[in-house]
Amino acid sequence: MSNITAADVKALRQRTGAGMMDCKKALQEADGDIEKAVEILRVKLGNKVGKLADREAAEGTVQSSVSADGKRAVLIEVDCNTDFVARNDDFIAFARRIADHLVNDDAQANPGTIDVEVLLHEEIAPGQTLEAARADLSATTGENVVIRRAERFVVDGEGAIASYIHATGKVGVAVQVNGVSGDEAAAFAKEVALHVAATPATKYVSSDDVPQDEKDAELRVYNQQAEAEGKPEQIREKIAQGKLQKWFKEIALLPQEHINPDKHDGKTIDQLRKAVGDDVTVARFARFQVGE
Image (cartoon, rainbow, N blue to C red; front, side):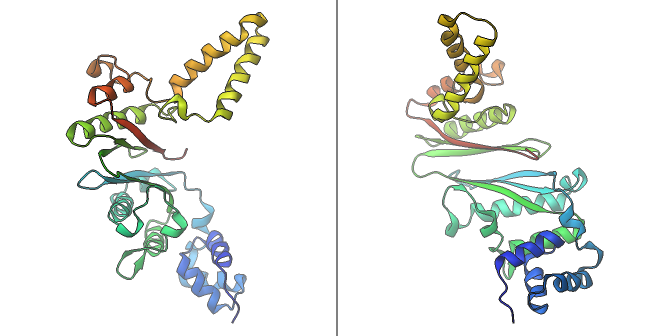
């Protein structure tokens, strides 16, 4: 029997849209012949083969799960082909099921970006891998269901995590604050999540987090713009620096005025943070938007 590699399985999966295990079994039955494996899958799965993989997964849902103690959270995006399926209760429940599984999985508790390819091999139920569950949902809906990305948050010590999912399910945010626990910290994290959901340009917690090469590139653009506008050379740098500071307020969270000025008296996120406690920090956040 030919040696079936992971690359062979992936290639067949991309070509047919069939589940990972179905592709592996078909390749084994075909002794590694991909064309023959395609025929085997066509017999097994009928006219669904090829159609699912060819369709772009441009719709979907963002869902989250936060542990009961507020110390762990998972944000996940699952995509499909149409908004009709994206609003389907079973599709949304599938995404939430994955998030719940991940937030309660002690064996996979490390914070950060979750490797989806590894995740697909995990059991989400006794005897059922996540890939098998995904393939079943894909067959049921007739659409290309894709687990696009997932992010895990873990508080080590004092802190809180909150998430916000927009009513449409197209935008989701998770925010972690460190330094203090309790209801006030959780409420602050929730307000930050609401703000980040409404400000898609926000990428960093503070201007200090912006990589130097990004700052340098932005400053070069502003200097070139000032030159193109015919500004005197001696003031170009000052103009460029002014624009850079304005850009920081667009992409950095802390200096931004909260999107609900009436509720928060026009305070910035940093001012709201200090009101909770000087030791409080916004450790990190993630914002997922379907299709971005």
